[in-house]
Image 1 (cartoon, helix red, strand yellow):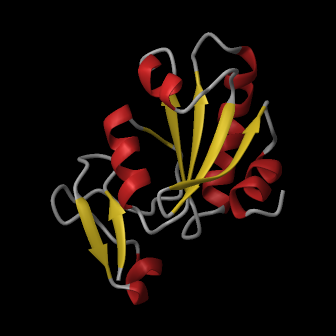
Image 2 (cartoon, helix red, strand yellow):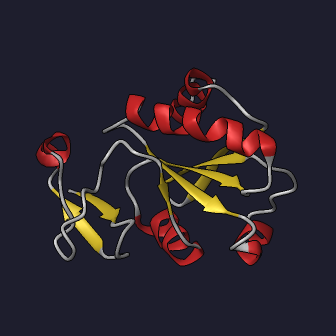
Image 3 (cartoon, one colour):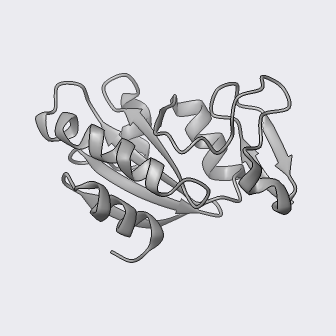
Length: 141
């Protein structure tokens, strides 16, 4: 059984491992839990997902005024599609959630942090292409 936080409504879902590849949906709101898309989330959902998720989670800390962040956005989305069913990729706007950025010690953007089982597993600053993001997310980079 794998625990996943719904990135839309914040509810915790328990998904049988055999059904992870079958497009599991949130039992509360019906949102797809492993969509293969990079999703914008808020600080509360991020904190809960880091604490609860059994699935690897990679967070792109970004801001709308940041040129390299805007350049990396489409690449991050491509990487999310490449990693569907392996890693969840999410985005947190550091301008809208400044206290969250401070609590994760974000000094420059874009910065990606990989979380596994509630702990930081890796950190990468600077814009990357989709393959570089995928390599980082899977621990190959």
